[in-house]
Image (tube, rainbow, N blue to C red; front, top):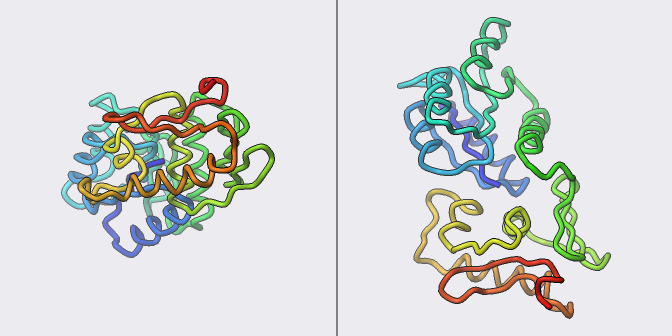
Length: 227
């Protein structure tokens, strides 16, 4: 899942980015409100972490402009301002939640997860295709009851496939959601990771879930769709 962090304090932004990436999220960053607005309108994100005190355009105005463009991505407002009136302004601008600095990363992560669960149409904890099961909370992956160990990037790739089960996903689509804005589309990294993932989730099983659609991309199907 892809998250945008708009934070002008570089150390804070780096701290948040590193922590989220360790949890297998794809993270883009912006250091001012105008850049944050541009990225939020250009790319599809699953959540946005937005600081209030930003250069060029503050977080309140940025949030309002994003909402005026009918972008409904969950927004977590992040700021050193802790007064009730400040929180009300943030929420009234269109934010979904509010976290005051300083904070523990575990709390930020919990709030992000809550926003992602709230957004998801699938309220169940786990994602599944046949006997393949992925739990986003415990970060465990199993097939036929056998645990499958994945790297952070492989996990992020599988999670995106499962959230879009049955849909053909192009390389550009995978790059946008599983890698970041600086990803080189001319590289073969996506194909390599899909191959690695396929070896782990399909190689030792009778039915193949992850399929290549020549000229279009890849698709993950349920076992009964592959008969």
